[in-house]
Length: 161
Image 1 (tube, rainbow, N blue to C red):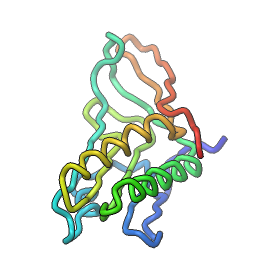
Image 2 (image 1 turned 90 degrees about the horizontal axis):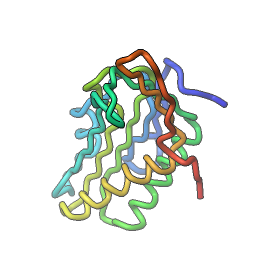
Image 3 (image 1 turned 60 degrees about the vertical axis):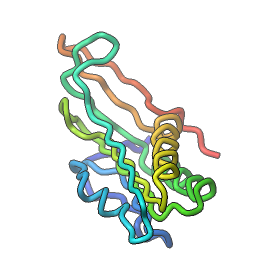
Image 4 (image 1 turned 45 degrees about the vertical axis):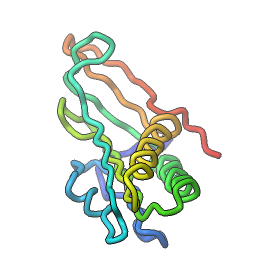
């Protein structure tokens, strides 16, 4: 199994669309993601920011560590973007960036942004993207608890159509 490691960013922006699909060890930028989703045809850009919170299952969390099977995760991201275009044909841009590595409480772990001419479609497409990513992408997180213990959790089921 190939796990994400520090190194170059994997980015599919060379695709025919203006979508940006990325898994990276580097910190994520709200400004960058918003800019990548922006387009003159947009009436709305909806951005979802997933962050490391300080608790889970009633226990204090001090950090999360994310690992991903990058080739398959990027394929899932591509499928999500394609499904968005099939369902919300007027979507102008789809951006999905996910971090790997150890993140502290408050760090951004995932950013999803969708630009559309109308807000309702933009909200719906963005929610679809994050929900589908969390269900299908081969990304795992290790929860680091305040008591020093850890626990691995799969955030996706790794299903590919």
